[in-house]
Structures are given as structure tokens and as C-alpha cells.
Figure 1 (tube, rainbow, N blue to C red):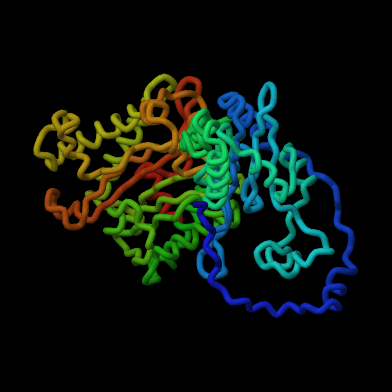
Figure 2 (figure 1 turned 45 degrees about the vertical axis):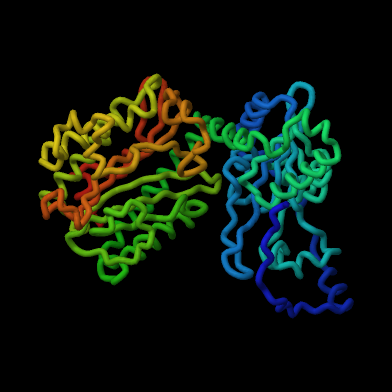
Length: 497
């Protein structure tokens, strides 16, 4: 059975007049709108190359990649819409994507024809523009025309109403990005099931539209493992504006310390920069002060920031292109690390630097984590926290040091904060590094406040240092090295305020 879209739990509270007199009046006396077509946006040729690469993987297959739909937050209020990353990567449409849009790559001799279906703006002869709060321009602003989007993205465009013609030919040669739009997936499955029941012989001879469910998601993820020049430039910009957000937070420390929920002020200050210089935050900001820094995904951010604390801030700004940075810095709120805080911080920094030092084309992605873990094991053994030597702890069946760092050291980064997540293991974790790959290096040490395996003075200290890395032809570049990260740099940064 097709998955049905949950109805909005609302009562019709519309007070829009319904008389013919009103309709005639509101539909008249409007100025002509400019019809000039934009130049193709910067990413249009890059998106076209990505579509060609995907086309080459699936000759003869119809590829359907939805943007997704707005999701209900509460009653008649939606979450801010963000298109599926695979859709944006293939179209170049970012924060301005029209919800419900669908990209279709129709097979032809020698490749595919790409067409973008979306709901274009309605004319003034329709009541949509004033009476429909979901899509009317009086409510959400004007939508672009088919020709404007076509010129902007360098794509053929059609009204979404014509997409039913695509659904009418769904068959075993149709691959759908199923996760992007559950409602559309339900419709496709229903149509395909009906087709197969009408023709049992055909059903046995070919796969269903639901077969090989992960193929398209996997291929779209793997297509992003190596970034093109446009993507790398976007990552540089995302890191740059994220650095500004961190500096904003440091500048607000006096106010942050004075508030009983100072972590919320950290979040708010960073979000202000994200909305001013980008689209939004790339993920929920972690503003973890004191003991909260030992909680890996602390996003409640409702605690105080106290003098003497370390505050771990994990945050990134997403640009209008949807590319995001992912940076973590751990700062001494008072401006100076204590001796124990410094000891832990410098161990984490050593692990990060050691991992970065081995990055070059030809090594395997998992080697980065292994190198960081070598340092973590050596330092925690040196401090007497492990029941065995560092070498013994590093053996696969021991791993005592992982008590203090249970997460991985790196993940791919780009249009998703955890990019390429559906890629196969042999291309991701076991993959060989190539120039253009972008990922994080983020070791940490976390000593829980009730951890009796460490001395009392270490308990409640959490440190993570995270940078964004791009692989170059002969090594790597730390894109975020300009955001203070050494002890001296961090202390001077906080002192400047």
C-alpha cells in the first residue's frame, strides 16, 4: 500500500473573502513582472558533469531524484525546507529549491535527457497567489518561472503537473531515490505493483521499482567522494564564515558567562552569523561547557558557562549552496588552561597533528583514525589510565584507550555534514585517498565526571579538536588551520575577546 501523507491537523481558519467582486479586484491592476532570464549560476556546469557521471553508471535506466517535501513541525507549521543533498548535488539548486521538485534522467541513445519538474508560479488569474498559505506568494513569496529556473540551472524544466506522465511509464528500468520523498516512493511502488499484477510474465522477467533499493543512493554518495573545484571553493568559504562565527562567540564571552544558560547564548550568537553569512547551521550546534563536554552530541545547550570551564563548541555554517563546514574548538573560558586541561588539550592536538601528517593520496582512509588512536593510546598509557601498555591496548581485541574516545576520527564532509554516508565500505572506510577528497580530523579525550578509572582532577574534562581537510596532489591542506588551535593561539584568542 502506498504511504499516505499525514494530513495537517488544522481547522480552516481562513477569513479570505470569497466573493466574485473580491476575486476580480485582487486579480487586477498588477504591474508587469520582469521576464529577463538569469545567467547560469556558477555551479550549473559542475552539476551537468555530475549528471553525466551518474548517467554513465546507469545506461538505459530511468533515474528519478526528488528534492523532497516540507515536513510538518507542528499543526500547520513546517520545518524550514532543505532539499535532499543528492538532488541539490545533481541540479545545483540549493537553499532556493522549490519543495516537491523532481529531477528525472530519461534514457536516450548515448545517455540521458535531464528534466527538472517543479511547481511554477501561478498567474494572477488563479486564487493560489493569495488564498493558498502553503504555496501562495502572499504567504511565502513568489516562485520562479520555468524559464527562469531553466536558464539559472542550465536544465530543461516542466511543470510538476506533467510529472504524472513519468509515473505512467514506471517499470523495472526505473531507479528512484526512495529516501528523498516517502509519498512519491509510495506512489511509485503502488503503480509498479499494479503493473506487475497486470502482467505476471513481465513481472517475472524484470525487477520491480523497489529492487536494488540502495543502488541510486549509494551511487549518489560515491559520486561525492571526490569534490570538484566548485565544491572545494564552497568548502573554503564555509570554513571561513564558520571561523567568523567562532570569533563572534569569543567576543560575547562576558555576556555568555553572565547568563544562567550561557550555552544557549553561544548557540544563538553562532546562529546569527550562520543566518547572516550563510543559509543556516549545517547541524545542531554543540555548546558544551564543563562536564557537558563529555557528552559527544550535547545539543540541549541549557547549561551555564562558568569561569574555569573548558567549553567545547562543535559548529558549522551551511552556505546557500548547502555545503557546510564542521569545526570543533575547545576553549578555556577564563582565557588560560589549567595544567591538567593543557595536558589533555595538547594530547588531543598531538593526535590531530599526527593524523594530518600522514594524509596523502594513496593511503587508506582508515589509517587516519589508526594514527590518531596511536597517540591517544600512548598518552593515556603514559598517564597510567590503562591496565596494559599502549601497544597491547592498540591490539584489536583490547582497545582499552577507546574508553576515553569512543567515536571515529574522520568522516567525509561536503553538501552533507556526514557526506557520502551510503557509499560502500570498500570506497569509504577502506577507500584509498584521492586528491579532492574532503573530510574531518577530530580526535578527542573525554573523562566522564564519574569515571573512577582516572584521577579526580581529570574527571569532567572533555576536549575535541576538529578540522576540515582536503587531499591535494602531494599531501593535504587543513582548510581550518586559520581558526586558532594551538594552546598559545587559543589563549591569545580568548584574551582578545
